[in-house]
Structure formats: structure tokens, C-alpha cells
Length: 245
Image (cartoon, rainbow, N blue to C red; front, side, top):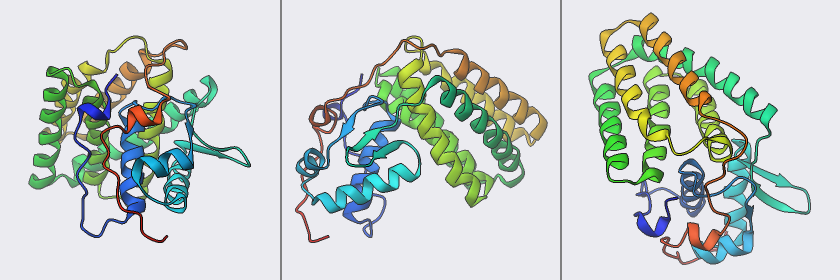
């Protein structure tokens, strides 16, 4: 399991990012990297202390995550990291299959030299992360590869849906994956990149279907690798001076 104490916090993408954005990104990354276990209680008080912000800011970030269905907000009980059931996991993978196949077909049609360079860099960074034993970063970069495909497809609704299902898939893998086999994914990502470069949408769609088969084939019901300790997961985050919400 990777701990944030071993990683640099993800860089802020823009100087216009709000405190809500920063908190959201840290929690989103912790879920995507599988450092937060499904079912973890996301205490507003504890997170406010960790990030040095008001509970109102935490509440807004958690609400955004709930809209992506990676956090569940329970009336009068607070928020938890979503814990998909087996049936929900099957439904999420079925939905992801539909969107991923549409995304890669559009990505082949809309690819540009700049987008190819961005995704090629992600594949290399993913391989480097697994090579140095940083599984958490490798998992996040694997997710970002699929999100970059959605950017490449140039379809905003598909991108928004892709972001949600990639995050939910990470939760499913955290619950149900057999062992730590995700580090083979960059080989398949390289093959997908090659298919996109070839300009052959039929080949690319077939390879994506095979890739998703491999991901789903690694799952069972018995594995949970992440943590429920909020302070441990976010130990590397520097507190920010709270501003009125």
C-alpha cells in the first residue's frame, strides 16, 4: 500500500483552484490510488483538521465526490468511501465497457500530435512508477491514461462519465482484486497507444475490449488493500490556512 507520506502532493493545476478543488483532488487521488479503503468513514472534522480548512469546504468537496459516486453521503451518518457490492461491480464494469469502447473509437478519429505526446508521457510515467515499486502512483497514472483517452475523444459528456467509472473501478479493484497484478497494465496501454497511432479504430476497439477483460478477470471477493486511517493516508498534506467559506 502506498502512503501519501511517500509521495509529493499532486500539483495544483491552476492558480485559480479553490480550497474546495485542492481538497477534492487530494481525496480523489487517494481513492484512485487505492489508499482509501472502500467503506472508510470520511469525517468532516478529521478532514478539516488534516487540510486546515473549514467543515463547509470539506462538505462541498465530499458532495462533488458523491456526484461521481465514489463517496456515499448517508443522512445523519456522514460520508464514506463507496463500497460497491458484487452486483454493483458487475454493473459498473458493464457501463465502463460501453463508454471505453466509444471513447477509444473517437480517440482514433480525433487524435492529434499533441494528444499523442501527452498520452505517451503518461504511459512512460506509469511504467516508471511500477518499476520503482510505487504502486499507488502507477494505479493513478493508469486511471489518468483512460481519462486522457476521453480528452482525446473530444467529447465532454463521455469525459465526465469516464471520470466517474474509472474512479468506481478503482474502488472495485481495491475490494476484489486477486493480488497486486495492476503493474502489467502499462504493457497493454502501450499496445493501445500503438493501435491509436495506426489509425485503425476496429483494432483499437478490439484491444480495449481485451484490456477490460483482463482487468475484470483479476477480481474476486476477498481482497482489500487500502487504509481506513485518514491521518495516515493524508500524512503528507500541508495544512492550509482556512478562509471563510
